[in-house]
Length: 153
Ligand SMILES: [Zn+2]
Image 1 (cartoon, rainbow, N blue to C red):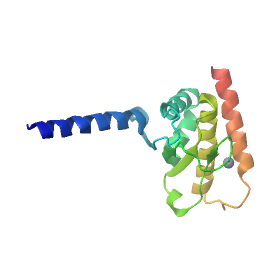
Image 2: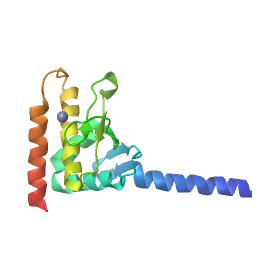
Image 3: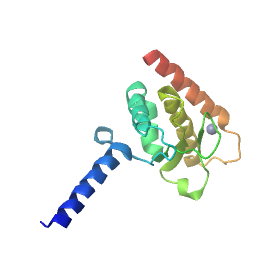
């Protein structure tokens, strides 16, 4: 192998390791793979993974819903929804969706925001009209998970 090739290979390995560490959640046991976009604001990207791990142990049913309905988690919310999370209604959200979440409020809040936005993804996948006020249902969801996790700790 030439030097140039060796460096290219080494660079590729570093990129894959970093991507594995920060940009993808892989849970083979539950057949759950979720892409995590890079955080543009510099918050710790591992927070998303810690939140998914907490949810997996704290509330497996909610975790399963995330795996089913969410393909990508974007930790750069461009909206001011529930504690900094949002779900955009558009065609691209059919199939598994992308949810925007804020990770700056700590672990439990991050978990709650994931559950809240996943609730919107479920609503969308169930074909409910986007303008209909469905916030109430999702606020109940994140309220429930927060109580559950606080007891779980
Ligand atoms: Zn909402």
